[in-house]
Length: 113
Image 1 (cartoon, one colour):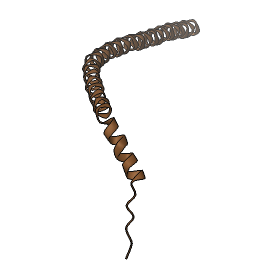
Image 2 (tube, helix red, strand yellow):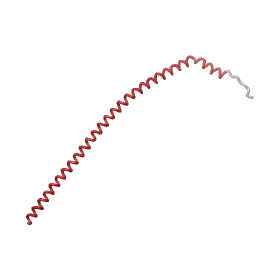
Image 3 (cartoon, rainbow, N blue to C red):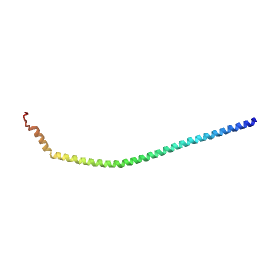
Image 4 (cartoon, rainbow, N blue to C red):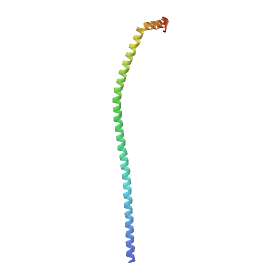
């Protein structure tokens, strides 16, 4: 009976070792699969980020172009207005100087009552 008990105990120990190996393999597989899933998710996130960044740059380029055109148009209008003001200043420069000199030198004092 002792040999039979001994054989039964040995069988149980062998089964326990085998179960331990199976559990270890399952843990390794699960760890490996989690790493693969994490790496896969990182790749998907990076691809999504790159796609959105490209879309943003395209959007920015399209709208910046419109702003540049508006800015150039505003610059042209401002330059034309400045030129117009300068020409008007040159045209009436003598009269303005004479009016200023007249105001300074032709004093008409009035008594204060």
